[in-house]
Figure 1 (tube, one colour):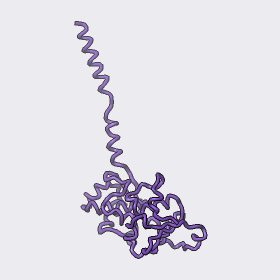
Figure 2 (cartoon, rainbow, N blue to C red; figure 1 turned 90 degrees about the horizontal axis):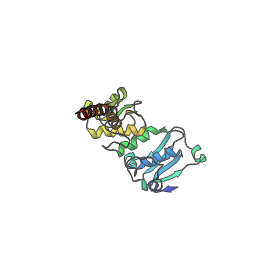
Figure 3 (cartoon, one colour; figure 1 turned 135 degrees about the vertical axis):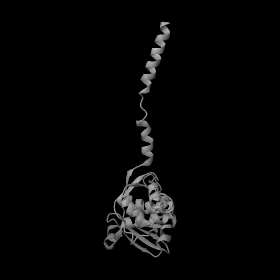
Figure 4 (cartoon, rainbow, N blue to C red; figure 1 turned 30 degrees about the vertical axis):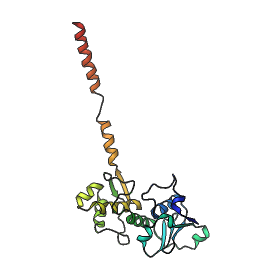
Amino acid sequence: MLTGFSSKTANAEAPALKPAAHLLGIVQHILASQDNARVTLPGMGSLTVLPQRQEYHADVENMEAFSTSSAADFEVTILDNSALASISHSGKDIRDLLWQLAFYIYEGSLIEGCSENDVIQFSRWPNLTRLPITPNAARISALLTRHPTSITLVRRVLGIDKSEVNRVISAAFSAGIINTISRGPSLVSSEPLLVEPKIPEPQRAGLWNSLFAKISSL
């Protein structure tokens, strides 16, 4: 059993999620390692994460408080095959867990990996009936399921507060249901290279050569 999990797994292989000091970083590490594990917060409950089944089981009374607790307070136990065999196959979709964790952690800021100028689209409709949501989560989901849209434009088209849009998109990004169509910064940085040809240089050189020839002939 590992305690103080965040400090023991803070290495180059761990996903660079922010804030990494919470449960989301632990779950991302478990998924990356493909180790079935039980995450326990003494006095608040436990979470069983099964990467190979893409499922999770939660025995938690207050998921928001559980999700936002310090990673150092959690105890992580890797499950062997015998322990795994005793766990039913009626778990919930791991993407729902990833949505919840990001939703509770990112209260207005964008998750790392997203930029406001990115053009994105939802790959599927999130199950909003069993997930924590904002008042306009359905409107955001409807727009982004139908049309690739920049994060900035989502706010303008729907007239929704920036913090609410960022929260829903962070949750969806964490759940893996966002396709990034194009990244704003890459488009901005690449265009000047395409529209800055070296054509004027030969013209300038020809002009100076012609002028020098006339001066020389005087």
